[in-house]
Length: 305
Image (cartoon, rainbow, N blue to C red):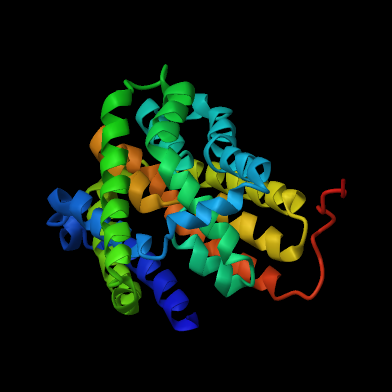
């Protein structure tokens, strides 16, 4: 598990660097990004059992607020900086902030000592709601800044999420998922490398030409992630729950946001997803250090009651 986690981080950061340094390495993947992402989502969704949603009955209001923290809070923070950047970059940042948490938050919660069962319920709910929630949030916070086609974004996200999810549930019904999961982690790492290369390569020239915009977007994402961690620790009732909510609220499905941003708004809109992909993984390293501490919530524990 630790090896997979290390490989996952190295794969992302290495692919980002390679895409910037040698754009030709990923230009070929552009036309296939949607299909590659669907394959990656399929392998990730093999871990999702829809019957786990029954666990929301006793804690429904807590999951409601977690969904607010996932979809609305980061977009609302980004909205405060709307006048500092180009409309296309801003629309891409709002999209990156409004996508669901990655399915991999389940494994990350387990690795960091959190509660993977709660992470699984949260990310499943987020992905089921995403085709409606994400375009609504984008329309709400970026509708006046860019031409937002609600219908096209809805169907694109629905296709990228529901088809792989339905296929994975069918495989689970047949009982084949246990054997397939043994190969899903290395296959997802390979697919992730291809996706990141395919996203970064066409945006590398724009990133160099808009270095200060990328730097600005990175700064805004840092503010968002910091506030999300603070809120997550405040909302959690135990350290295990703090870790779980911090991972779920911050670790975005940046592959989904990148593909949608590229197709809906253009290459420049991918800068928000690029910033998230890099900073999210640095944040996970920081959370890993904090999770190993025997004590300490930095005075952010929410009062009981």
